[in-house]
Each structure stands twice: as structure tokens, then as C-alpha cells.
Length: 462
Image 1: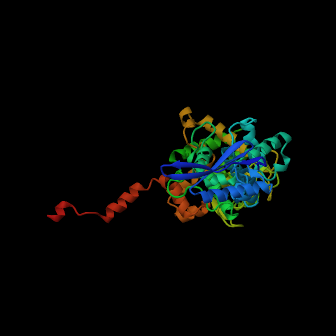
Image 2: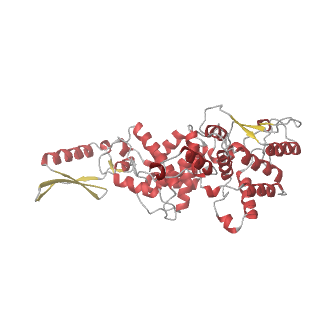
Image 3: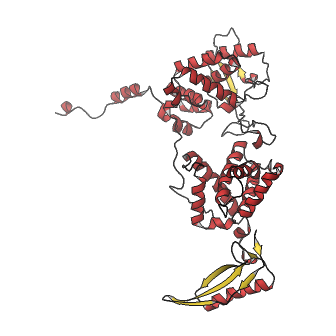
């Protein structure tokens, strides 16, 4: 908060115009002139008297608003950066690691857009890093090195107040900056929606604290870009290609057996990647070796998303959580075909794994690292695909293996409610995401519609 006691108050200026007389109160703060026009002399005299009284009382004047500190609203009295730090702290305990990270990113872009000046004494990348990794990280803020602390102190001094959100023009300016990438291009629609969602929560928090009278963000149709959650059917992997990719993975000299078992589980039972890495040996219910039915059951009850050690409470890379969108303690059981039963039985035996052990441990124990999985998947795509196929969406992400399995379940004629249970989705989400990938049933549907008939033939009417 920047204030001064160097105040000079001038006589009220009178100016005659075609529309009438305007009475303007003029005063200076540290040599900078401020003006406030009024329609009547009485209003101007009353306002000037307030300024004179404040100066005589020795009250400080705000260099941002030009008014005595006592005239400030709550929004004018609170610095945006200070509010953003408080909001990040309020969200920290109630949100997961990835949400904390995304909140820090959104607040970083917003804070830079709400600086009073574009002239910065520090490198832009250093300012962004200081804000994202320390200012809006509750656990690490007190660990900020001296150079970072200097940057954050400058940001606090240079930030506008919360009153900036009461200016519709400034709000649009901030949203435009937040929705723009560093290279000047518009961010992806999904990123824009995520940032807007985070800022909405921040503004509702400001309203709850009575800093703002209402949420200033635009509402209604067109406020955020529309996005499609539907799976691109080009990302699906044909069965023959998947079989060859699994074979190539199994032949990798380093960790091939473990990665083959991991990707086989992804393909045959369709868990999310963070659910697969959280599995233990006793989550796989294998049938006796001499049983006629060689299907196994895979129990899915925990997820361990990789969020980075800076964003978890205990400093670990992975964060243990319940199933996405499900209540605490919820589980689901997914059947695995004989091919998976054989793979997992052989893998568990060869690795000497025991109940309670991680099913897919990392190279040094613990949870299998996402970088290891992604590196292996990129490598096998490069080996198996042509250059054109490698550049295509087919299997570009590990998550596309799950998309492939869920689509196959639906195309095999399994009831959507059953597939939704196996996938850990609602039926509505399942059909919204995968409706465009369901095929192979059109010929049968045509025959059924033809059998039911339509308009009678013209010859029948004569």
C-alpha cells in the first residue's frame, strides 16, 4: 500500500459549459495532480472539506486512488497479490495436487496482468517462476531464496488493488491476458475453461469476504469457449497393432516384463494410468491354474496421480487418492480375459512379487514413474508406426489405450451401464465421450428398421 502525507488542496475551479457549470476540486499528492468534477458547488465544497479535514488530521492519502485512506472501500484497501496468496492458502487444504498446480498457474498469469507497470526490473521468466513455484505454493513459500523474495516483494508493491475487478474494461483486459499463451497465441479451449473456472472460484471467495459486491466475471453463453469431450476415433489403436506393440514392449531389455504387464492391464481392463500404478498384487484375483474359466478379476480402489513433489503435502511425487468422481472407499471390479490372466500370473511369478507388494513398482521401488511409461510408449510407437502414423493421433497418449478398451466394450454390445461401471464413469459421461466411436452395429440396426417397415409402396396404394 503506497501512501503520502504531501498533500496540497487548491480552490474549487469553476467552468462554464454549454451543458451547465462544472465545479472541479483539485489537489496534488507528491506533486501529481488529481481532479474530481461535481455538478453543484455544494457537492464540490463538501468533498473539498473532507479532503481538507483529512489532511489536517494528518491522515495519509492513497497514491493509487488519490483519496484519503479512510475513503477506501475494502476492495481498494486490499492488494490483489495479497488476496491471491490468501486464496491459494484457502484452497490448498481442500484441493488435490494437480488442482493446486493449476491454481498457481492461473493466479500467476492473472497477477502479471494486474501489475501497475510493464517495466519490470527482473527477467519475466524469473517473475513467473517465483509466483508459480513459491508465492502460490503454500508449502514452499517460506522456503523462497533471497532473490525470489525480492521479486515477490516487488510484485506486491506493483500490484493493483482488488478495486481493479470493479472496472469491466480491466476485467476484459485481464481475461484476455490470462487466455493468451506466452507466444501470443490463444490458449487451448480446455485451458481457457480451466483458468476461468479457477478465477470464478477466486471471485466467489472475494464476494464471500465482502471485498467485491458481486462476481465480476462475464456470465452466460459465450463467456467461455465450447469444448468437446468426445474421443477422436483416430486415436484408437487397432487390435493387431496393439498386439504387436505389446510384443515389442515385452522384448525391451530393461523393464520389459513389468512394462508389458502394465500396458496389458491398461489394454484389457481399461483403468486410468493413475489407477493402474496404484494396484497391488492382491488386487488381482487369479483363478486356480487348473480352473476351466481362466478369467481373472482386477479390483480398482485407489489412484496415485503424478503431481510433482512440490505440490503434495508430504513432498512425494505421487499423491494417493480415491477413485475419480466416486465416494470415499468406493471400488470397482473389472474382469480380465484369459490373455491377461496368463500375463499377470507369469509376471508375478517371475518377479517374485508377494501380496501387499506394488503390482508395477518403480525401478527403485515405490510407484512406477510416468516418465518411464511415456518414454517406453513413445519408443514402441516409433518402432511400430510409419512416420505418418507416428504423427497421427493414433495411440499418441497412454490414455488412448483406455479409450480403445472402453470403445471395444461398447462395440462388443455390452450394456452402457455395465461399461460405465467397469470404466468408473457415469453412463451420461460414457455416452458423451464415446458415442462417436461406436460402430459395427449399423448393418444390424438397418435390418431391424427395415423389418419394422416405413411408408407403404406406391403399388400397394393403387
